[in-house]
Amino acid sequence: MKLKTHNYVYFSFPDNSHLRFSPHGKDGLEISRVWVNPNNLGMGIGTLLMEYFFDVVGDTLGEIPELYLECTGSIGYGENKQDSPISKQTAFFRKFGFRVKDGSQYPVYVSMTRQKEVLEKQGEQQEPSSNELDLSDKLPF
Image (cartoon, rainbow, N blue to C red; front, side, top):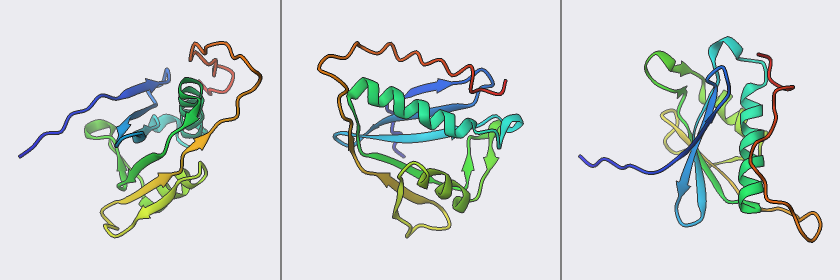
């Protein structure tokens, strides 16, 4: 058996809702988890996590590289495991420009991608971002 390890970036909100991503291939990123605290489902936290992800990646790289993810019908593991139908997961990610790349393994999982997006520069010089966005007015807790 082989064990594959890799670095990842993880950020979370005060309720422990979180998003995790890592390098994928030569220039892409893979979103490996978007988990929302069950007490706050349906409150837009997943959307805020995705918006924060796009802001951080865009500010840091000046572009959104090609993105990959897999919808598996569940999120997390152990006591944090949440079942979520693949159809609901793909609908969520479609809102952010993801499209099904490979559905041949359905109903086990579906692979999705989002094409690279080059961001327009606003002005000649931009101040470096601190990547500290204040989302406190958007969070319900």
